[in-house]
Amino acid sequence: MRTSVENNSAEGNATARRVFASDPCPGSLFGHGFADVIGQYDWDETLKMVEKATEADVRKVLAKARRNVNPLSPDEFAVLISESADPYMEDMARLSRRYTQERFGKTISMYIPMYVSNACTNKCVYCGFNHDNPFTRKTLTLEEVENECKAIRRLGPFENLLIVSGEYPSLTGVEYLEKVLHVCRPYFHNLTIEVMPMKARDYHRLTRSGLNGVVCFQETYHKEAYRKYHPQGMKSHFEWRLNGFDRMGEAGVHKIGMGALLGLEDWRGDAVMLARHLRFLQKRYWRTRFSVNFPRMRPSESGFQPKSLISDRQLARLTFAFRIFDHDADISYSTREAPAYRDHILSLGVTSMSAGSQTEPGGYATSPEALEQFEVSDSRCPADVADAIRRNGYEPVWKDWDQVYDI
Image (cartoon, rainbow, N blue to C red):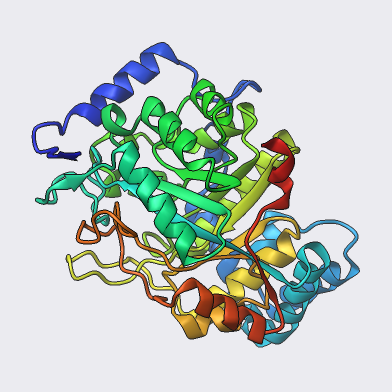
């Protein structure tokens, strides 16, 4: 089905009013969510903490990490992403590899995204799906969804599917997603969604329909800047989005994926806030698995320019630091990154990768001409990515075995 959203720009805010009216306390069963405690962390002070870290601080944190007695705190993680840690990159890489192999072995979990809609009521200034962008939108019918599933299965033995959609409640709400999950389940063992944040009861409803995981990007934890980047639509509500991770935990979602768009604001501030957020959630939802992703913003032909660019070396340092900070979280790299970079980093802390990605609805079989959300950098076919993984001494894993017993 094709649809234009030119006359529906108010839907996101109207939906927000309905949601908040029916769910006046969208935090958590514990009385509040992370949005209610983030105020205790000052953004500028967080950046100063990173900037003031010395090489002596780095050596102290790495010595603690080597003893592996107590987990690092977010403040200690902040030391490891500082420029003072740059001379210790090789030490950090070795520790990151060690802890990754101890927890995950020499494996890389493979997944593939399937975009089901680029219709969106939000006006995010950096996104190709921005409501005001003048193009015809595409939302897949259930028949088209099944055709995409069949096409993906021909690409490789994928069992981990990431279902992605723009945020358009009347088109891609819980009812539509429930039907999509039912269509996809016979083809894939593990189903994850990256869609609009929902109520806890809606997440729970989807878990009953085959949902295994949810991915959501907070975009930036800088509250004032967040409003600038998301001026209209449901996504403009900072607290609703931030507390969405608590609602996932309440609903019993098996795996929660987190991240920020590195470059919207200073990437160091968002990285430390992400670490704090992860620790907060882990203490409450200890049965839940967590993953993190580090998508970095790049200059865009549309005119949007990231506020700060994160270099290849800084991204590697962030990856090593996060693995040293948390040994259990899945660290995922998408096809946003170039082939050579992904091949190099895969043995140093990464545990999952996408391959063969098409970032437009119907891109595998139905409508390859539809608008993409972003342009991929690694356009290799899944078989080539898998071969590269094997050449690095690792094994591509196509199934999430934790989910086999849930089917």
